[in-house]
Amino acid sequence: MKLNKYTWIFVGLIAAVYLGTLLWVRLTNPVYLQQNMYRTWEKSYVIHPRADQSFVNTSANNNHQKPVALSESQGYGMWITIMAAKKGWASRQDFDRFVNYWLAHRDYVGDQHQTPTYLMSWRQYYNRHHQWVADVNSATDGDVYIDMALAQAARQWPSKADYYRSLAKKLSSDILTYEYNPQTRALTVGDWVTKDSPYWRLMRTSDVMPFVFKTLAETTGDSRWQTVNNAMLDRLVDLSRQHHTGLVPDFAWITRNSAKPVKPKTISTKQDGSYDFNACRVPMMMAVSDDPRAQKVLKKMLRFFSHQQYVTAGYSLNGKRLVKYQSASFSAPIFFAVSHHRGEGFDNLFDSQKYIFSRPLTRKNYYDATLTVIAALEGLN
Image (cartoon, rainbow, N blue to C red; front, side):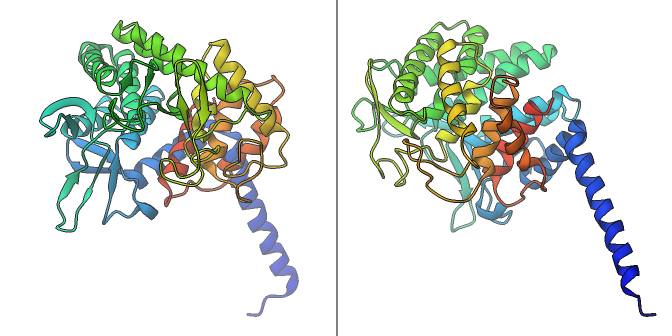
């Protein structure tokens, strides 16, 4: 039977109403959105190599045939699982699987890599012989995320608090032994950076985590975390002051009293000295700190973003767009930050960056998806 044009119009209207209703439910029901995003993330990215282990797959396009685990993603996975557990969507056993994988893939230091540590090997993957191998060396951001998650786990599950706190102290001790520069009083970018390394004075701006450092100081009883916090936060303030935008670079050279952005391709890309895929996490790291320095850095950046027509995936430090497209990796940390500072002049960003929740969670970009889920679980309450 041939349908006339009115029938097609009616069908179109019904479809539009249906889709509109789904979108409305998605955007106006935070709990539905949070749980849906967490479940999608877990199903898409979390891999269980053994019954008692889990890691987050970071491979390009989420390739499950050639998965890649990173210490950074392990820390994020543990952090997200804690947040989900607080809402009743994850269990202690889910968290322990991440713990077990970390413990099974710790890094070794020394000339012959003979000394075991509680730092995590920064990457694991299948080599050309299809063997699961771990690269030597650590990445500081991943280790700090794992340490933070352990501290939170001690509060979430009191019955195992002693176990998690013990692990947090051991990891904390190794971070401050092998990933710390006593001259700058700041964390280095990994245990591969020694005093003889050209990167001895290098700081990754997204490693400045005042709330995390405060939590670790309280959990471990180690006052050196407050020293780290003061030194790194002061250097971040130095970088923020250097441009009217308040934007900071992915990496900077630091001394005990100063900081300056690195040049392009100092570490890995031509954007090493720009606000790019490392520095984009800075708003998230500053958001929940009560330190006035952190709030000063954050609000200067948010003022810049609030005057942008739309936020793109990267900027030069003077505010020039590096690309024309948007990315959840940049928008999610901004949404996270603004959600903790409603009514302070940045609510236009709360509305504009909410676009990341209006579409299905990507299943092909671990970084975008992970930062979006963190923003949803923390920012949509």
